[in-house]
Every structure is written in C-alpha cells, then in structure tokens.
Image (cartoon, rainbow, N blue to C red; front, top):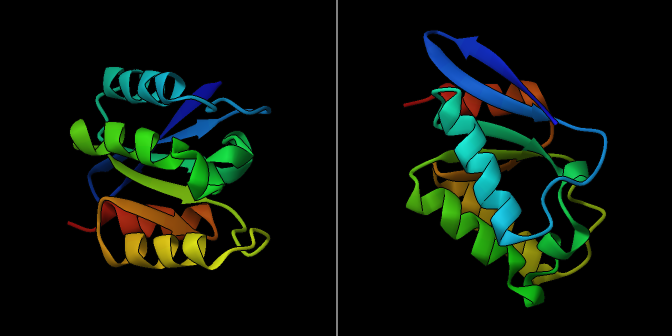
Length: 120
C-alpha cells in the first residue's frame, strides 16, 4: 500500500494506492484512517478495487462498520470505481444518499474525487 498526497488549492488529499484488496474488515478500515492521519490528511481517496466485495453487499454490515470509523474520526472519504456492476437497489440508494452529503462519496474517477474533497 502506498499513500500519495495530492493537493488542490491548499487542500491535502491522501490517495491510497494498492494492487490488492487492502480493506476487508473494520480494523483494516481503521488502520487506513490512522495511516492517513499520520500523513496530516483528513480527506482520503480509496479505490473500489481495493475494497472487499462484501463491503458493497449491504447485508453484511461491513460498509456500515467501516464508514462509521471514518465518520467518528471526521475523515472525508471518496471511493472511486465503477459501481454499476453491483446489483441491488439498496446499494444504489445508499450511494445516491451518500453522494448528497460531504462526508462519504462514491465517484467514477479520481479527478471528480479531488474536486469533491477540495470543496468546503
């Protein structure tokens, strides 16, 4: 896992880069929060390919557990990926509701994530 620090208009954003799944438990999600805070960032971009598919199955509760950690630590999160491949109206509704807010967003590419996370 590598953390790239991106900057836009004075806002620092941590982009987590990895080849494999790095977040499949709430503890791994929390470790990413800690690692990003260590880099003096409170905004992070994660890639959907690095998150366990069970995260996107809302019945498992994994998304709720992990996202609660990000919320507790007041970390803004953008998850970048192709979410159309996941079936189920519940996930689509969850993504739509999340994208209405500022804390957790699901976006299609890194440039959109940077724009969203650099908004106040």
